Image (tube, rainbow, N blue to C red; front, side, top):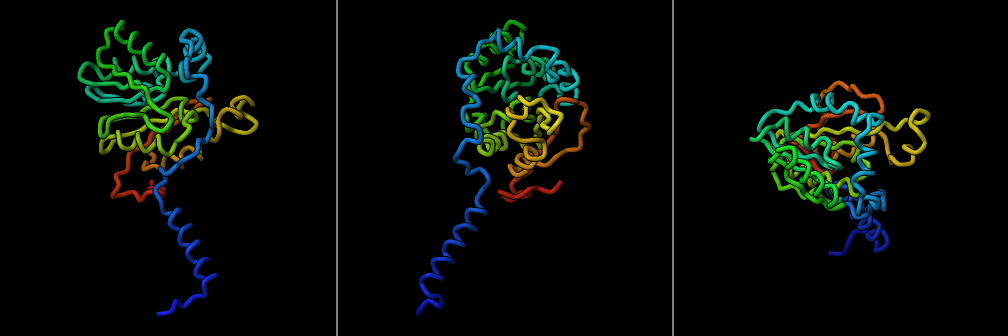
Length: 247
């Protein structure tokens, strides 16, 4: 039977169908880095220099660390992933909070940081810390292994946020949660260096995380320079890839 459309029109329809198919593809099919080179400085970071930046009262995530810890609502026996663990500020706090029956994965792209965290955890008598050296596209966390994923001042360092978030979604157990602490990015209020360093603001990051299979859980925001947002994992049956789950 002869095709009802002339060849040029058939070709246009094929192109349209191909575009629609790409639009329906999973959001995780990301091939290009959103910020090439942003993690170059962490290929071989100096620990003392990093501590002078990360472990200072002038940095809100450090100054408010006890309030952030309390807001995470950890319980003994939980398994937590500190993603972008850095010098291990929160890793060690989490390890003490979940106790010997719990576990904390310290995840970072820098081997120096992971070795430092493992060393300082042993010295503090914390035997429930496991270090994981991640990749630009994956946290390398085992599937179905954690109850809470914690990302502090690190999401903007994700070169491949869709792929990295997919790995976090896989690692979380059913009902698992994600806590995001990030810098505010507001024109006219945020310092120029942060405006240039942070690629997007809270609304964009929130939409990206929702599209990766999460929904926001109501949570009071108690930070000034940063924001604290809690998400809950949405199971595949309740979430269509590429869509934003209902709140």
